[in-house]
Length: 154
Image (cartoon, rainbow, N blue to C red; front, side, top):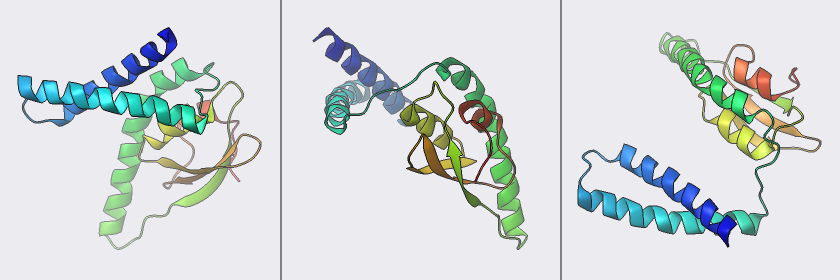
């Protein structure tokens, strides 16, 4: 039961902070509604995770990946801006589908979420043997992708 309470608390805190970031003006009624909604969503998130049989997976590289993520977000946002400008000039941006292989010590769930939270790469599907199909913007692999994969794209 303690483990469930810890998971609910983590979900609740994260969802409450997200909600408070998204509302315009923070007032006590807004905080109360956000707290109640985050509690319901936290209970649903745990139930969904248990029903799906999902688990965090390998976390050996999580600390390094979390440190690299802000820089990857900025770099990929720059690459996205270049793609938008090229599109406005009549040159359609080029994106490609690739297959990548996750590095040992990573969990496909959190790595997919972290990589997909940048505009340069989106995980489309997971394959066998720690592989994933991803869609990337133009350019080579970013520092975050290099840290979480074994390198090379197919």
